[in-house]
Amino acid sequence: MPIRRDEDTIYLEGVCAVEDAEVLLQQLQSGATAIDWSGCLHLHAACFQVLTAARLPLRGIPENSEIARWLAPLLHPIAMPSVQAVEAEPILELET
Image 1 (cartoon, rainbow, N blue to C red):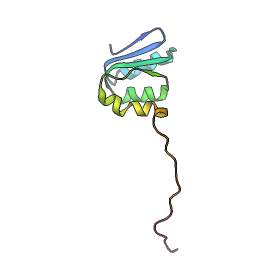
Image 2: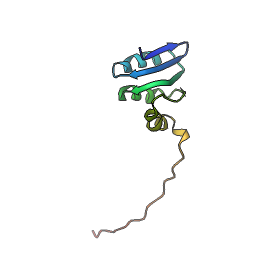
Image 3: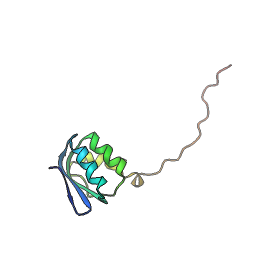
Image 4: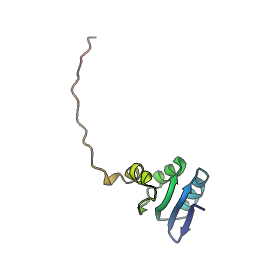
């Protein structure tokens, strides 16, 4: 099974498919406080959505480098550089 729990940590291992999202949610609802995804090879979008909503600390770097590259920054937004909004000047003014 790709999702297992040991004490307060949930471990994601191997391929986490769509049907595992419900298991992940149940484990989160039962009081887990951290998630270790270092053994994750594939993460279905449904599981990713559960992780996004959970907002728990993630431990380790996923085995799949693509998951680490594309999804880790989304789940760890603090590690990303901040973006400052600037007010743009209009390029074209329309007559009314």
